[in-house]
Amino acid sequence: MTYIYYSHFRIVKTKDCIGFIGAGNIGGTVARLATEKGFKVVLSNRRGPESLSQIVKDLGALASAGTVEDATKCGIVVLSIPMGGYKTVPAQLLKGKVLVAPFSP
Ligand SMILES: NC(=O)c1ccc[n+]([C@@H]2O[C@H](COP(=O)([O-])OP(=O)(O)OC[C@H]3O[C@@H](n4cnc5c(N)ncnc54)[C@H](OP(=O)(O)O)[C@@H]3O)[C@@H](O)[C@H]2O)c1
Image 1 (cartoon, rainbow, N blue to C red):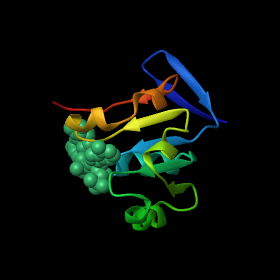
Image 2 (image 1 turned 30 degrees about the horizontal axis):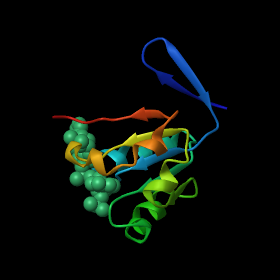
Image 3 (image 1 turned 45 degrees about the vertical axis):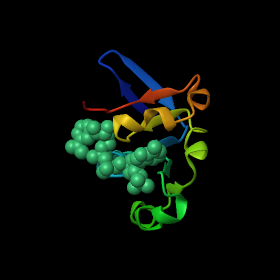
């Protein structure tokens, strides 16, 4: 069982994967930190899973690539895309998920 510190006072216990919509500087870095802590990650981007083969290889066995929809099947989703792109993400797929959105304006 792995623990995620969620704000300063809650701890989320999870065996779930973490889905990434966006696998650039932020998504790639957080995914690396997550795999180092033993989380499974599912990476996605705009161009499709084939374009993520190198980063998946670098991250190792806990990482896989999928579509945006595949990433939203995880209980925790990191929305690490430029803020202007948020409307392209199907909001209904994020219902009930823990959503991490590291946007900076
Ligand atoms: N970099 C920083 O130091 C930093 C710090 C704080 C916050 N932030 C915020 O973090 C977010 C990500 O920044 P970043 O630097 O990681 O950007 P980045 O390196 O340009 O990566 C963006 C990623 O998002 C994907 N993407 C873009 N639009 C998408 C869409 N509509 N659907 C699915 N995937 C999409 C891109 O996929 P493709 O390659 O296929 O286009 C790429 O994988 C931004 O909101 C930024 O403001 C960044």
